[in-house]
Length: 443
Image (cartoon, rainbow, N blue to C red):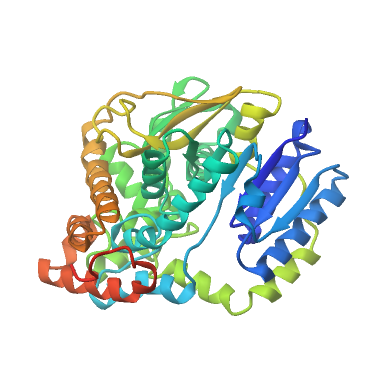
């Protein structure tokens, strides 16, 4: 029987196109129904055209359905991919621009800290609505979330809908592993690793080349080769201090701690001269959105006219679906799940990113024990801030949101208690259209 895979927020053009491409490369899904749902008619039209191009180019007997009706897309789906963005460019930019008024310099702001928390507050009501529809329309589906802030959204969805099979995916794990392998000259197929922590702050607890510890080779590359050091300055400094390598880019990690962005001279030293894709410039993601926002139709038409490689990429989603309801080839990945004795020294019930094995009809989580103490100390701060923010969401309590942001390492390194309150209140005002469930918009 052919399978059905639904994309909620399918208007995320590049991402949806690549994931559909990957899915259709598996024989079990050649005749799948690909259901595309978005609320933006123009974006849905573009991605529908792109997916139909893939079906035609690959000569697949697949069926493509596009709809504005979420329940129609989800009806009887075997797999669900969520890639939504709640709120347009103007409100998203305020997540970064308001903190900067208070000298809290944000690079991306989609994960945690004041920017990530307000992104969560806008997005989570919609995510919970999606989960309600999944429970009604396809309760047995495998649900893969790519929407940020990953940890907070997954934590809330999984706690409110424990009966659903939901996990969150981030490509930083496999992307960083490939980067480290490149640095030491190792073929990726000869690399194995154990990676655990929280989203964007997960660490390779071991990294082996043909079964042998490769960390000495990584340390040698970082400390003796200037081009390697400069590629990821923030992450390399963290590695030299903490002894383990973190998964997400230097720019992201520079805003998750108090070490790199609290003063202009530190930003100049660590966050600007890097050569990787995101060294840590101010408002990197806002600039990307702004550039594409003004001419996205033109850029999308250009992408549609260019040849598109039908070879499978390295995103996890297609392999997970194949393992669970395709040809059942097991697949190990890092997923975001609630912490029920998987990492001993992170908060129980918080969202952690750990090894997960996808196999026939199940996602099997793997316990990793305790993180090294220095990693537990760093990630506990973020995890506990996220837990308090989620509690504040469900309580509709602005003071709890303020308190969660108080303990954000970068914010606390830059601002006083009163300044943080003023910043949070201004962010509440900017987001008031989305926060009607709060009993007040003043912390």
